[in-house]
Amino acid sequence: MAATTPAARTGGGAAVVPSVGVSGTGVSGFSRARCAAGWCLVEARPSVLAVSLLRYLTGGVLAAGEFAHGHLVRTLAGAPIWELAVFAVYLFNGVMDIHEDQVNGSGRPIARGVLNPRLARRVAAGAAAAALIGGIALGIPSMAAIAAYLIVGCLYSGPPCYLKRQPIGSAVAAASLGPLMCYGGLTAYTGDGWTWPGAGWLVVAVWMWLWMGLVGAPAKDLGDVTGDAAAGRRTLPVIYGQSRVRRVVSISAVSLAIVFIVVSGWLSWWLAVPGAVMLASAGAVTILSMKQLSRGDRSHLRGPYRAFMVTQFAVYLAVIASTGATTLLSGQLS
Image (cartoon, rainbow, N blue to C red; front, side, top):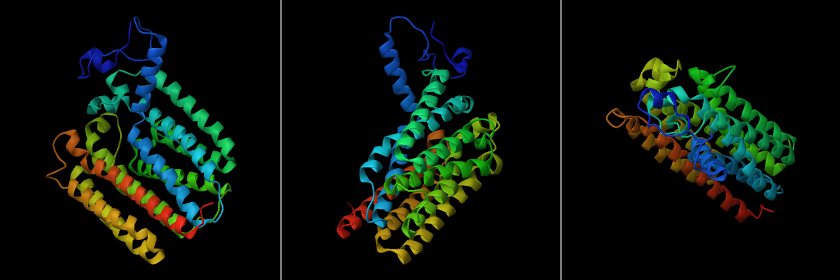
């Protein structure tokens, strides 16, 4: 007989649906496996997988703009390997967030009871192992970066640190994942260990770290206060309240955009386009953080976080486009 989540059995608000990954009747093994694979992908959040890919490609394109010769094919081959690491980290996060996700009424597969958490944990472990093996093929620097990504991601979600339960630990860990992806693109392209990546790469990587830590991390928690408090997570909205955190998110977004424009304008003209995109996006984050627009149900409370995610897509695409065009025009890409 198919299993259901605790919430489903006790009438906690979740629909009573069979959990994928356990024995059942009337469904072939192939169909169950295909269904489970699909739910694992949904649990790992396709939007996060997509934006993580852009972070990796941003690092590679910035490296191509800095170095006359590199490994374009290896950079492209490294993308699915790094995506396996991202998939493993966020699927494991879903496994470890069952309680708070159910309290918050999340629509994720594990919280809804359609994906068995034990199966999801095994799939995450397999993806992590595959990513490490693939990292060896990319070279020791890439493997080390992938290992660091997996370690930080696991320490964020689970034992022994559970960094997600602490406001500083949560922000630092979540923010570190972005620059690690960007560094992965750099090492895949150069094929070396630490190499001076150029001022442009550093500006983008530092902005990425600060944007994720000061804007993304607190904005993400605005819609999860009830579940986070029930799970013992001391996030910024739980400790200081949603109103204060909304102000912090707004001020941080605009401040980071202004600083990026000033610094990038001083360094290179090609960063002007991403800077303009960032300033417009920061305005959107600020508007959606206003009390009148970010209160009510969970969908409204997550407005600032959705704006943060859209900002990342827009800025990374702008960086890739402007850097790639400049590199091609200069004839550096080989």
